[in-house]
Length: 81
Image (cartoon, rainbow, N blue to C red; front, side, top):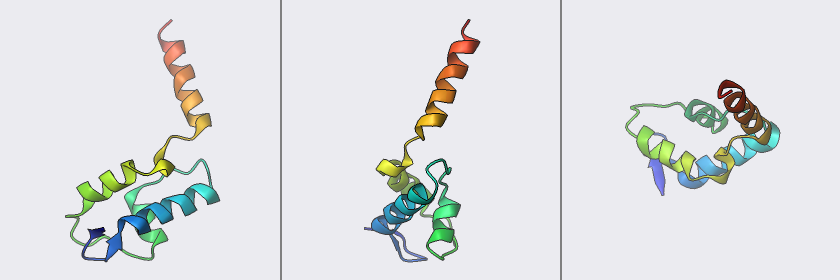
């Protein structure tokens, strides 16, 4: 499915870019801007952003890296005492 008509970016392109970024650095924070750069594209009108974010959210590569999740859990426990 085409997500960004201005730049002709498909959902499979987004998922592939996310997989590539996660494989290169498992702790990287993935943003739409980083995906555009990874694909060699630039955002144009921004009309695709809601669908772009939904596509990102439905990717298994979007999950929080385990070490960041553990840090967040430790912070929650320490502030609740």
